[in-house]
Image (tube, rainbow over all chains, first blue to last red; front, side):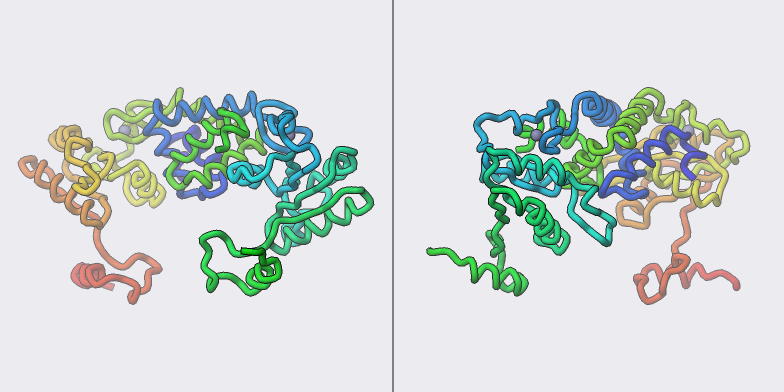
Length: 201
Length: 201
Ligand SMILES: [Zn+2]
Ligand SMILES: [Zn+2]
């Protein structure tokens, strides 16, 4: 094994890199060598960036977003509509929606979707805090921006049931043809939904 | 962009992670969130491992291997045959050969192969130090353990010419059928080489 050659420090680095999504043992070795060969340009800066992240980045106790402040920048933003909470599976979905720039509202990060196969149960998600936020007088609408997968839709139904007793409207993202998408690549469910939800031209 | 949402610290981390081989911008975002969500188990340890690597890991001035000492553990190992130098493109190849455990010799890491297309010229490789090592009285054989690609074989020929005036034998890895490899997946060149270099059974 590599540790008998290059020492435990490199082996430790490889093992940690291999735990990143998208990197396996083989690509972790390549990444470690890439870093070691670029000490000033990459290894050092990445070590510093991780140290800063460890010190300063935190999870917003209100919405689950990651930021250097708690509550996060979004939760403290007075220009956002406090009546709307966009419910997402993860922070990457929040980032994607913010990149789209289509709405100036609050968010709620569930931290996953219900998945019997993967053992994700309601107690693993931020559901209690969502219900609490949904019950506040200023909250008027929850937009469920969850994946159009079986697990995503199961979660959407579960959330809807949880807040059924509250005077809050629950909506979800429209199904339809992706912009730039070719019709004959789309499944029948999407085409049916796109037809049903057709809009005036 | 994400920096307007989550702050420059996260954006910086994502940009650095995206420079690792195997990670693009999208997977770098996922990796950053994965790290931020595992501060104690992964982000902190990786920050520490990189800081240790920055402090302690160096490139062996003799052979080009990476290690916490210079000369490296391999170069200082008295049980290795000093007559043989295995010439490799990169440290990952050295690691692969050491994992195979097939030879106890020295190494020489070229740091690449000649590639007109990628602009890799002789002055970018550790060729001067290789010729110097090949010229020492104890050196009897260079084993060229380079890829069986056009660039790898071009480099092998170039090295051979460089040391032609020296009393050193130059060999290269055999071509043949990989163990577990199915014949009908192999190209004709490999099959021809495997036939020519057939061994008694
Ligand atoms: Zn927040
Ligand atoms: Zn060495």
